[in-house]
Length: 555
Image 1: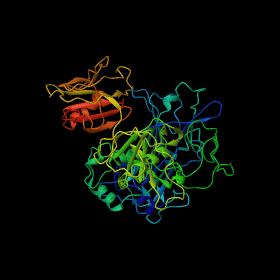
Image 2: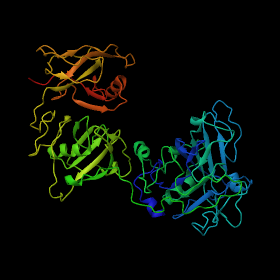
Image 3: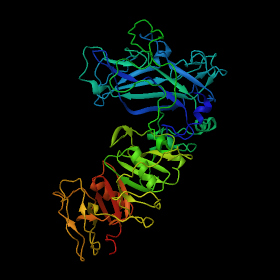
C-alpha cells in the first residue's frame, strides 16, 4: 500500500471524504482450553482521535506528508519494561457500572463486564526527512510526556497526534475462562497483550488535513463542526469492504491463528516465524459471484441498492432462486443486467448501475435455491452483466416461473414465465390468478374504497390471515378475515382498514415502499406518513406500500 493507491480508493469506513488513510491493529481471539481459536467481535469499529497536542501555544502542528507511514508499539514484546513505547499502549477493562479498575499495559486479568478497550497512542515527533524507516519507527519519536510535551532535538517536527481505541467484546466469553489467566491472544501470537501495536499509512488530502489542523479547534471535538471536511454517506461508510486476497480461513473455529503466528508465551521477546505452511502470496481479490460464462454472462459486482430509487426496475421472486435463474428471467425481459438480492429476489435492467453504488460493498446472503451461491444481501445486489460477445451456444436454458411487481422493459422474443405478474403498461403480459393479501391502514376519516379488487387466491405468510378469498362484488373490495390482534403502536390518527387482496396489476396502493425481514406495521406506517401518504399497507411478511388513493383496477 502506497500513498497513490490509498488515495485511489473507492470508499472508506471513515466518514471524511478526504481521508483514505489505513488504520490497523491486531485482531483478538479467544483461545480455548483445547487449543482452538475463535475471533472476538469488535464493538463499533475503531475510533481514531486527532489531537492537537503542542509543547506550547505557538508550536506549529503539521499534517502527515504524502507517502508517510509509521508503527506504534512492538509486536514481539511479551513483558513490560515501562519505556515510552510501552507507556503509549494500554488496555481499559470496561465496566460501565464503575468497577473497571485502572488501565493496564497488558491484558486485564479479570472478566470485564463490557469488554476490553485496546488503546494505541502514536508518536508525534518527526525527524523531518524520512517518510518511513526499516523498522517503521525510527523516523518518529515520542515527546517527553509520551502523549504530550516537548519533542527531542533529533525529531523536531511536530505532527498532529493520533490515538486509536478499539473495543473487543471479550465479555461474551465470560463463562469460558478455565484458569486465572485471560484466555485471549492477539493475532500476532501474543497471549500477554504487551505486543499490541498499531499501523498508520497516510491517505489524507494533505492540504485539507493541514487546514483542519490550523482552523478546527472546537472544544467539543465534534468532527462535523470543522468546515473543511465533507462526509461520505453513512450507508457507504458502513458497507465499505475490501475482499480478501489471501486464501486462508480467518473466521469461525480455527485450529491455528492466521498467517505464521504461533502463540509465543514469553516473557522473552517473540521471534519471527517462517516456513509454517501459511500462504505467502497475495492473490486476486476473492469473488463472491457465480461462474455464469456458459450463459454468456459474467459477474460484475456487489452493488448497493436504494429502496427509494431502485437500481433495476424489473423485480421477480422465486423461493428457489439462483443466479442462473435470475439471469434467464432477465434475458426473457430483454435486460442486459441481472441482480439477485435478499436470497430470493431478482432484478433486471438495461442501464448500468450508478458508479457511486459500486466497488465497495460485500454481498453474503446465500441463494434460496443454492446455498453455495451468493444472492445479494439486504439492500445489496449481486449483479451480472451480459457479455458483449456471448459464448457460442450460450443462452437461456428455460425461463423460470417468478412473481414480479414491476416491469418497465418491453419483452423480447423470449417468452416470460406463465405466472409472471406485472403492473407495467409497456408489457403485454396478462396477470394470472396469483396475488397477495395485505393489511391496509389509513388516516382517520379518509375516503372509503369504492372499487372492487380482482377475484384471487391469496398467498400470505401470516398464519393469522385467511389464505383464500371469494369473489369481489361491484360495491367493494374483497376482504379477508382480520389478524387476531391489530398492532397498537401505530401513529396517532391511523386506523386499520382491514386485510385486503392486492390484484398486483395495477397495485391497490400504487407506491412501492420498502421490504425486508425487519419490517413492522408501525414502521411501514411511519415511512408512508413521512412521505405524505394517507394509506399504508404491509404485504407478504416483508413489503410496504403507500398511496393517497385506495382503488381497484378499472374493470
